[in-house]
Image 1 (cartoon, rainbow, N blue to C red):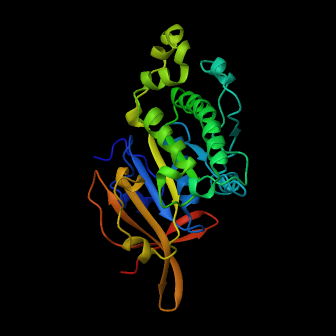
Image 2: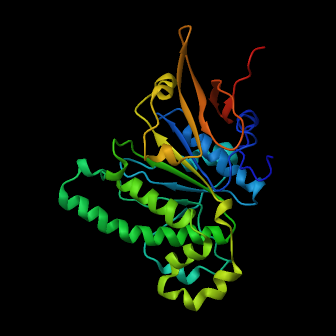
Image 3: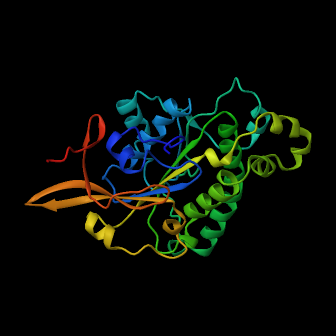
Length: 297
């Protein structure tokens, strides 16, 4: 029953999830800054090397302040040297079928730091400028992700999305919606049409020679919440029509307070595809990454 599951490589968590995450689905990991979402996401991406023969890729949507510490975490925890890939221009279409060229495993589409990304934070002219930039970014991003999938990548981690009351007013979320529905969840031939457009007819033989199944591609979405305590996260209703509703699996990560001591724990709030317990799972962040604490018997 667990064949094909995409494991985190953390035995206690994978067991809790019936063997791991289901390929072809969306998983949301939600929690405040500093609870270990990025480390957990990188652990899942790194596990792709053993399971599918290729690590996952990291899409960092940070737009304000510095990018996340993905490269440092990856190097220290997994001996993984992350290779950034630029999305400037769309010249890489000419390299799409050159398999001697391997695109980097980290992409940061919104590279100009310090820019706000929600409509209510922007003047109308700034919002329209963002929308114009987004059209260019989306086509380049589609090329990047498709080129990864035809080379065997099967895991995508999306990080750095800022909290917002309305997803429809976020440039970051608009990027994610396009990526998820028009590239990750499209059959490969339709994704190729989106990428190649007017060139598709002339390259259909290459497309057919490099087919892949979109049902094998998993997506992990790391969402930063304003709530720090796990109890507060658990108490929040799952909203209608938002990212949580569309997710197959939801993991909540937060701080705990017990007997005068602060700790960290996670909770599987939603998981379709296998039986799952209701217990709170304590963990620690160590120099070896996220470690599930042993339970006293």
